[in-house]
Length: 249
Image (cartoon, rainbow, N blue to C red; front, side, top):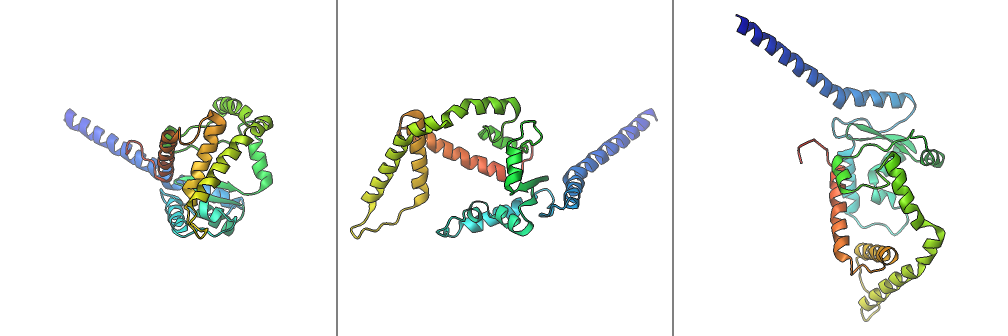
């Protein structure tokens, strides 16, 4: 009889624990995001509605694939190409609006005065949203760090962007650009025309400028490192767009 009572108590406790976990899961994945959405909309902030678990990720991925599948128009309107989802949300809901990254609301600020206020904040009122842990493993810098770590990294890189330093780099920039123009000239056909894939050419130009200005070498000498960094960037982008489940990957 005592063993039976113990098993009954254990079963009841297990059922209670399972119910608690289920309620906590439902609260985290549905109620909490919907409450935040309601609170923000009560403040007059429009935006997309919360989509269970994934947020705007499916729509964002679909729009990006569609945008990258067609040639870009020859104009300076690059936002519809780089981030078509962001462009569509801002066009629909205004320069201050709401979107979703998974279960986390993302407040989009498109007004210059608000952006200035956030960037000038030194009291820690505006914190960067937590990233997918896989992204933190792949890339960690001033765009993701917080607090003292961010301040230390910022102090280390600031001298490289002083006006005098940048002026001293101009000859290196010029050398890289001249090499690019010479290479394109050699690719021209006899009729003075040629078709060139600009994207890899500009990536190589950027890498060559960085190599010359920062390390005193060239892109060719550090090609392997840049190729590895490119692979790392692809992995980081995949991790950023994917839903993170601990232990799954």
